[in-house]
Length: 482
Image (cartoon, rainbow, N blue to C red; front, side, top):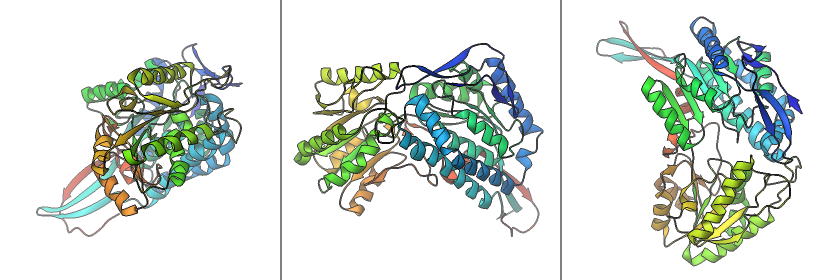
């Protein structure tokens, strides 16, 4: 039982202004395993005020960028030291298999912190350009106070992408973790203290939807960085538009994995199982539409079904487990509802979609065949282990089907010909893509086309999201870049 009774505001641990708590329920045991305060609107006000003071009056925005980058690097080192502890908290609170939590959650988060530290140390913060009327100095300055709203499915890696970039840029922040996964943010707050980040620069307030809405609309916030559902993203985008504040929105996906006829299926399935089903399909980049040619359709369906059946489902704390439970009872009901919907729509359930254990919010990975791209199971984000295998006529038809979606976040193509795969990748309208693989990289921008979001995180583009550009015209000859 992990119990916290304080919030991290203005560099210190402080009591909430309210009495409500967030109970964290294990998706594996269905028992309460943790408790934190539920941040109130007044708590959000205090956190924003602290971040505002730290930005407007504090040293952080004016600290040498190299020093800011070094502090971010110290957080990376501290996270590496506490990897197992934080990974076990993530597994306990949201059911991600512990091996994935160590490598794909905390390990990747540490890589993101490290990468931004390196980027910040060598970034061009100011340059001069010759102009007809003299010289223009172009400065990159921090955007201000950032509201970072973090989801439950990848809490450490998502917060790293937002907070590392914001800190290197010189911003201050208020982080609101999901009420389903608030436990792992507490060791992060301790690392922020230990790394020497000044008081008020980072504030962490777990809370529900009301606290999140208050944070997003708060007049003291200059920018909102949100990862979550399309429906919530639309509301946040509307609020930010009304207040003319900056926002980045990393939203949902319904990504297509195109299996070309020349693909070697054993190798393809070995990699696609991760691309499609990691974290029990509870990832926005999951490749849940699998496109197969009519010539090899039955072969692909059989291989995918065999792969799904072979994946080990069970206790997420067991290092051998590949698929853990879904995060909540309501999420399991949602997934089961889509399995039933697929049957009603006329798709053929080849395997899965069942409750394998009497306790825990588990659903075995489901593979549907005979799926048309206009079925709801092929168009709506299920956020669970449900795969739809869709037939195509030729390569052009495969690209057309892949693009026939309101989403455009991720995708992949599987082929023996790398150049052919790259040609397909250039034609599919998504923000990230893989050829015979898929993965999010710290050095490359992550974001989506269409309803999958606005703006980019990670890579130099992610840092630029937290920067304003200022042009200063003056006399002189342009000659320097710093």
